[in-house]
Image (cartoon, rainbow, N blue to C red; front, side, top):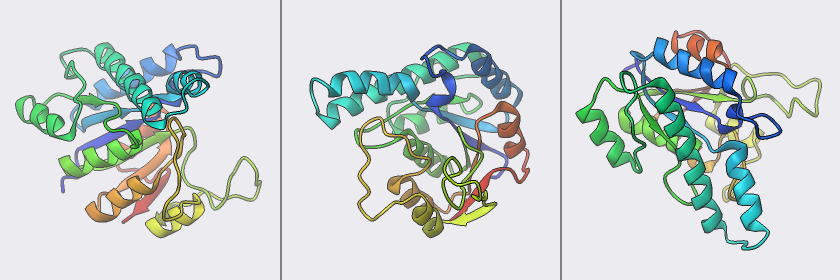
Length: 233
């Protein structure tokens, strides 16, 4: 497995503020980060974030159908991905959003030097799971940018004595994040990792590092620095 190339996941929550305004300065930082690291990045998966949850919440009030809500979340994430790809530009980024892992592989075969952007793929699947699938298919390490700087022993927002872990096993991550064998994840629900993600990491043995979703931290992770939390398969 090549270690000089990565799949990067950018959480959709990083693209908007609490009032649903587009965080243009942060998006520009991501754009510059991708351009500066284009030789190290094979694909970028973008989440739906607050915009996806806005649509999901509105529809849920009228039609409580999880599959329908998931479709809206997928569309929002793909729109986010297409927007960042457009800002990065055609010289660096493929100007389209693959709708399947098979399509991702075909694009990478036809345009191996391009950074490919993706959003959601399937109903019932998080964009984090998509990132894990993409990393597995491309045989790349995965860096996940989130709104926290790693996995803690307990919720750091509730416990002042919570400590960030440099490394965790899959079993430890599942226990800390409260993931049971059949953990229920509803449309639009945000989790750092979920059961599907952990299953892909386990079977593929891909290295996964969770870091603070800031351009400089993502760049440090791609440079091999020990930032955030490494999830060990």
